[in-house]
Length: 95
Image 1 (cartoon, helix red, strand yellow):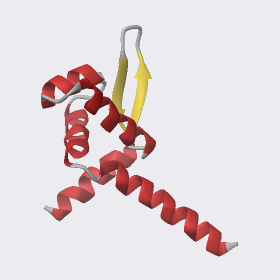
Image 2 (image 1 turned 180 degrees about the vertical axis):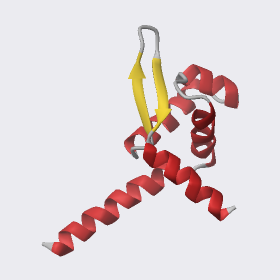
Image 3 (image 1 turned 135 degrees about the vertical axis):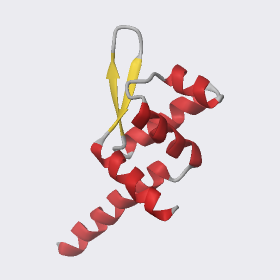
């Protein structure tokens, strides 16, 4: 039983690490730290990347539990989770 629990924990960690294992996703997290509640379109324009690319990065961040999505009447807004804040602090220690 304990062996399966450890396996699950490793998979959870893997999903988390994969969520931020891209320079664009790290940039997006930094942007959302400074300016929460941004739409995909706003992020795509700020980074000068394709809308679909930005949406995919945000989807991956959400799957990893690093970004929350909230719908307003016009668009989906994104903000960092507490976990993402910890990840950014951790990444800064590696610089």
